[in-house]
Length: 85
Image 1: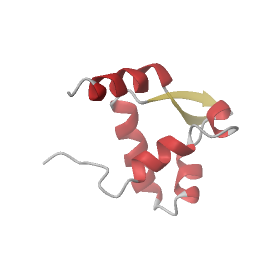
Image 2: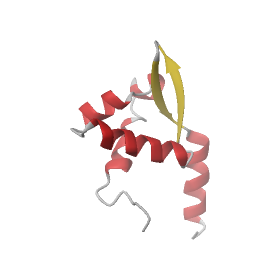
Image 3: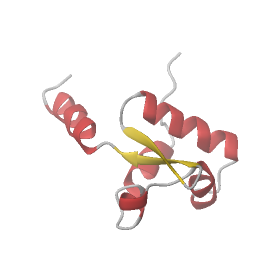
Image 4: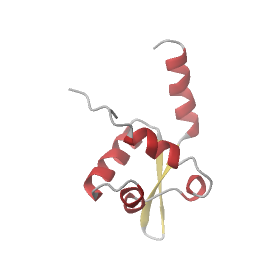
C-alpha cells in the first residue's frame, strides 16, 4: 500500500520550506523534527520521500545535509494535476 501524506505533514513541510529564510538556506532533518514536533526518524522519512519524488533537492553545508524545495519539479507536478492526471 502506498504511503500518503494523509495528515498533511509533508504538505506542511513543503509550505514551510517555501517561507523566507528557510527557502534560501534549506532545512536539516533536525530542524524539521523540531519545527513539526516529530521524532527524528519520522522527519527523516518524510524528507527522504519528498526528495525521492523530486520535490526536494539536497545539498551540504557545514558538514550537514540540507533540504530545499525544487520549484521546477513542484511546478511540473502541479501542472500534471491541473491536467487531471
